[in-house]
Length: 244
Ligand code: NDP
Image 1: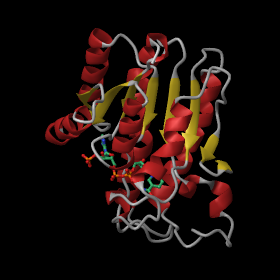
Image 2: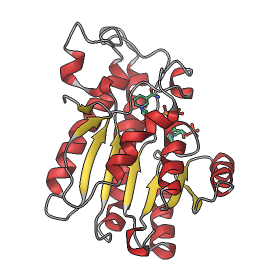
Image 3: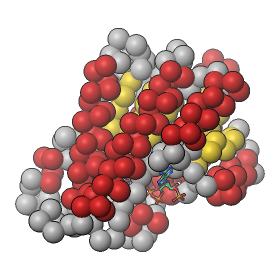
């Protein structure tokens, strides 16, 4: 790959699941990967596994819930990398006992929002100055079809029965964050998009998803690498444009 085309990509929650696969695919495409993980041992092990596949990668300690770790990550990347070309906001959680709005445990809803929404805003704010240093910054927020107001309102949707107040609400909020951030950054060249990876077998859902992680990572990788005339402020999956 031409050195000028080589991007520096940070993926949050990249020690396993879709994030690890996004990191692997970006690395295999010739880009430098900063593998964000909140647990040092898990992060180092994942980075080692990718290095063994010939990928240029290093672990960055990064916990969305820990402001000090975000500050340290930004300082490290500023000193050692100089910029971030691609920020993939992948880290996220779901909880087993999430459920219907009339009875769901409010603390559970708060916990999910703390990671999926507030945590994603926090990491984005901490790293945005570094994305602004890129000649063509890209931010991809890993959302979900479950974050779509339109799909949730459709009683005939395949996942209409999945009414998770915490998770679905946090991803709907993340979609709003995507639209607002894309608007804020529209004159900077930074493209901000949300992606629905599709139902993918990972620890998040007890491996019940019907897609492999390769399939689940594909749209995020595509949106991470869109050209300068590519879209911003959108919501897509491998099937095309998703409804908000
Ligand atoms: P996994 O549970 O396999 O991976 C989640 C990752 O996020 C892990 O690396 C986890 O770290 C990390 N993480 C969680 N909380 C934090 C935190 N506070 N700080 C840093 N990292 C954190 O899930 P998936 O790979 O399935 O999920 C990845 C993304 O895809 C999520 O945003 C999810 O909502 C979304 N998604 C997944 C779908 C699916 O079907 N799997 C469908 C639609 C969307 P650790 O290992 O330390 O827990």
